[in-house]
Amino acid sequence: MLAARGIGVTYETVRQWGRKFGKPFSDRIRQRTPPRGDKWHLDEVVISIAGEQHWLWRAVDQNGFVPDVLIQRRRNSRVAQRLMKKLLKSAGTPPRVMITDKLRSYGAARAKMGLHVEHRQHKALNNRAENSHQPTRRRERIMTRFKSSRQAQRFLSVHDQVANLFHIPYPGAATADFRRASRERAFATWREISMT
Image (cartoon, rainbow, N blue to C red):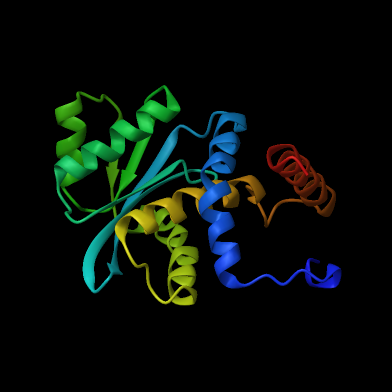
Protein backbone atom coordinates (compact mmCIF):
# COMPACT_ATOMS: atom_id res chain seq x y z
CA MET A 1 0.00 0.00 0.00
CA LEU A 2 2.78 2.41 0.85
CA ALA A 3 4.78 1.48 -2.26
CA ALA A 4 1.78 2.43 -4.42
CA ARG A 5 1.97 5.92 -2.88
CA GLY A 6 5.68 6.22 -3.62
CA ILE A 7 6.83 5.60 -0.05
CA GLY A 8 9.77 3.23 0.29
CA VAL A 9 9.69 1.07 3.42
CA THR A 10 12.52 -1.20 4.51
CA TYR A 11 12.44 -4.01 7.04
CA GLU A 12 14.29 -1.69 9.42
CA THR A 13 11.44 0.85 9.22
CA VAL A 14 8.93 -1.87 10.05
CA ARG A 15 11.11 -3.00 12.97
CA GLN A 16 11.28 0.55 14.33
CA TRP A 17 7.48 0.89 14.03
CA GLY A 18 7.12 -2.37 15.91
CA ARG A 19 9.39 -1.13 18.70
CA LYS A 20 7.57 2.20 18.92
CA PHE A 21 3.93 1.13 18.59
CA GLY A 22 3.94 -2.56 19.57
CA LYS A 23 3.74 -2.18 23.35
CA PRO A 24 0.98 0.48 23.37
CA PHE A 25 -1.07 -1.61 20.92
CA SER A 26 -0.68 -4.80 22.95
CA ASP A 27 -1.59 -2.92 26.16
CA ARG A 28 -4.77 -1.61 24.56
CA ILE A 29 -5.66 -5.07 23.26
CA ARG A 30 -5.07 -6.53 26.73
CA GLN A 31 -7.39 -3.91 28.29
CA ARG A 32 -10.21 -4.71 25.86
CA THR A 33 -10.09 -8.49 26.06
CA PRO A 34 -12.82 -10.18 28.06
CA PRO A 35 -11.89 -12.57 30.87
CA ARG A 36 -10.32 -15.73 29.50
CA GLY A 37 -11.04 -19.35 30.28
CA ASP A 38 -10.62 -20.96 33.69
CA LYS A 39 -8.47 -23.85 32.43
CA TRP A 40 -4.80 -23.02 31.98
CA HIS A 41 -2.32 -25.08 29.98
CA LEU A 42 1.24 -24.22 31.07
CA ASP A 43 4.31 -25.29 29.14
CA GLU A 44 7.92 -24.40 28.52
CA VAL A 45 10.12 -24.85 25.48
CA VAL A 46 13.79 -24.21 24.88
CA ILE A 47 14.77 -21.45 22.46
CA SER A 48 18.19 -20.26 21.37
CA ILE A 49 18.99 -16.60 21.94
CA ALA A 50 22.41 -15.36 20.82
CA GLY A 51 23.70 -18.93 20.97
CA GLU A 52 22.54 -19.49 24.56
CA GLN A 53 19.75 -21.73 25.77
CA HIS A 54 16.71 -19.93 27.23
CA TRP A 55 13.29 -21.19 28.25
CA LEU A 56 10.07 -19.76 26.86
CA TRP A 57 7.30 -20.28 29.42
CA ARG A 58 3.79 -19.92 28.01
CA ALA A 59 0.24 -20.15 29.29
CA VAL A 60 -2.73 -20.96 27.05
CA ASP A 61 -6.37 -21.15 28.09
CA GLN A 62 -8.83 -23.81 26.90
CA ASN A 63 -9.88 -21.69 23.90
CA GLY A 64 -6.33 -21.24 22.60
CA PHE A 65 -5.79 -17.66 23.82
CA VAL A 66 -2.33 -16.85 25.17
CA PRO A 67 -2.59 -14.66 28.30
CA ASP A 68 1.15 -14.24 28.81
CA VAL A 69 4.68 -15.47 28.09
CA LEU A 70 7.92 -15.33 30.04
CA ILE A 71 11.51 -15.88 28.89
CA GLN A 72 14.08 -17.02 31.46
CA ARG A 73 17.46 -18.73 31.53
CA ARG A 74 16.38 -21.27 34.12
CA ARG A 75 13.75 -23.97 34.36
CA ASN A 76 12.84 -24.23 38.05
CA SER A 77 10.04 -23.61 40.53
CA ARG A 78 10.97 -19.93 41.05
CA VAL A 79 10.39 -19.21 37.37
CA ALA A 80 7.16 -21.24 37.36
CA GLN A 81 6.01 -19.24 40.39
CA ARG A 82 6.90 -15.99 38.62
CA LEU A 83 4.83 -17.01 35.59
CA MET A 84 1.86 -17.95 37.80
CA LYS A 85 2.04 -14.64 39.68
CA LYS A 86 2.10 -12.79 36.38
CA LEU A 87 -0.93 -14.75 35.17
CA LEU A 88 -2.87 -14.26 38.41
CA LYS A 89 -2.19 -10.53 38.30
CA SER A 90 -3.57 -10.20 34.78
CA ALA A 91 -6.48 -12.65 35.26
CA GLY A 92 -7.52 -11.54 38.73
CA THR A 93 -8.78 -14.99 39.72
CA PRO A 94 -7.04 -18.36 39.88
CA PRO A 95 -7.93 -21.00 37.30
CA ARG A 96 -10.25 -23.91 37.99
CA VAL A 97 -7.80 -26.39 36.43
CA MET A 98 -4.09 -26.16 35.69
CA ILE A 99 -2.72 -28.60 33.10
CA THR A 100 1.03 -29.12 32.77
CA ASP A 101 3.54 -31.64 31.55
CA LYS A 102 5.48 -33.77 34.04
CA LEU A 103 7.80 -30.94 35.16
CA ARG A 104 7.60 -30.85 38.97
CA SER A 105 8.32 -27.12 39.17
CA TYR A 106 4.67 -26.29 38.50
CA GLY A 107 3.46 -28.36 41.46
CA ALA A 108 6.13 -26.86 43.73
CA ALA A 109 5.23 -23.32 42.65
CA ARG A 110 1.53 -24.02 43.17
CA ALA A 111 2.25 -25.32 46.69
CA LYS A 112 4.47 -22.32 47.55
CA MET A 113 1.77 -19.91 46.41
CA GLY A 114 -0.97 -21.78 48.27
CA LEU A 115 -3.13 -22.18 45.18
CA HIS A 116 -5.94 -24.66 45.68
CA VAL A 117 -6.64 -25.59 42.08
CA GLU A 118 -6.90 -28.94 40.38
CA HIS A 119 -3.52 -29.79 38.86
CA ARG A 120 -3.40 -32.34 36.05
CA GLN A 121 0.03 -33.55 34.93
CA HIS A 122 0.05 -35.54 31.75
CA LYS A 123 1.96 -35.18 28.50
CA ALA A 124 -1.02 -35.83 26.20
CA LEU A 125 -3.33 -33.36 27.99
CA ASN A 126 -0.99 -30.46 27.30
CA ASN A 127 -1.14 -30.53 23.49
CA ARG A 128 -2.87 -27.14 23.36
CA ALA A 129 0.17 -25.50 24.95
CA GLU A 130 2.59 -27.54 22.84
CA ASN A 131 0.84 -26.44 19.64
CA SER A 132 0.93 -22.78 20.70
CA HIS A 133 4.73 -22.84 20.37
CA GLN A 134 4.56 -23.47 16.60
CA PRO A 135 3.98 -19.83 15.52
CA THR A 136 6.93 -18.82 17.70
CA ARG A 137 9.15 -21.37 16.00
CA ARG A 138 8.09 -20.04 12.59
CA ARG A 139 8.80 -16.42 13.63
CA GLU A 140 12.13 -17.51 15.11
CA ARG A 141 13.18 -19.05 11.77
CA ILE A 142 12.04 -16.01 9.78
CA MET A 143 13.87 -13.62 12.10
CA THR A 144 16.95 -15.92 12.05
CA ARG A 145 16.87 -16.37 15.82
CA PHE A 146 16.21 -13.81 18.50
CA LYS A 147 19.14 -11.51 19.29
CA SER A 148 18.45 -10.94 23.01
CA SER A 149 16.03 -12.15 25.65
CA ARG A 150 14.60 -8.63 26.00
CA GLN A 151 13.90 -8.46 22.25
CA ALA A 152 12.30 -11.92 22.32
CA GLN A 153 10.14 -11.06 25.36
CA ARG A 154 9.04 -7.79 23.75
CA PHE A 155 8.26 -9.41 20.41
CA LEU A 156 6.39 -12.42 21.83
CA SER A 157 4.31 -10.31 24.24
CA VAL A 158 3.13 -8.11 21.38
CA HIS A 159 2.79 -10.92 18.83
CA ASP A 160 0.66 -13.11 21.12
CA GLN A 161 -1.73 -10.27 22.01
CA VAL A 162 -2.26 -9.38 18.34
CA ALA A 163 -2.70 -13.08 17.51
CA ASN A 164 -5.28 -13.35 20.32
CA LEU A 165 -7.23 -10.50 18.77
CA PHE A 166 -7.56 -12.31 15.44
CA HIS A 167 -7.89 -15.82 16.93
CA ILE A 168 -11.16 -17.67 16.21
CA PRO A 169 -11.78 -19.99 19.19
CA TYR A 170 -13.37 -22.97 17.44
CA PRO A 171 -12.24 -22.95 13.79
CA GLY A 172 -13.53 -26.43 12.96
CA ALA A 173 -17.01 -25.99 14.41
CA ALA A 174 -17.46 -22.34 13.40
CA THR A 175 -19.75 -21.47 10.52
CA ALA A 176 -18.63 -19.13 7.76
CA ASP A 177 -20.91 -16.39 9.13
CA PHE A 178 -19.40 -16.76 12.60
CA ARG A 179 -15.86 -16.56 11.21
CA ARG A 180 -16.72 -13.48 9.12
CA ALA A 181 -18.37 -11.76 12.10
CA SER A 182 -15.40 -12.61 14.34
CA ARG A 183 -12.96 -11.26 11.77
CA GLU A 184 -15.00 -8.06 11.36
CA ARG A 185 -15.05 -7.53 15.15
CA ALA A 186 -11.29 -8.10 15.27
CA PHE A 187 -10.63 -5.59 12.48
CA ALA A 188 -12.98 -3.04 14.08
CA THR A 189 -11.11 -3.40 17.37
CA TRP A 190 -7.78 -3.12 15.55
CA ARG A 191 -8.92 0.09 13.82
CA GLU A 192 -9.90 1.57 17.20
CA ILE A 193 -6.62 0.55 18.80
CA SER A 194 -4.41 1.74 15.95
CA MET A 195 -6.58 4.84 15.41
CA THR A 196 -6.75 4.36 11.65
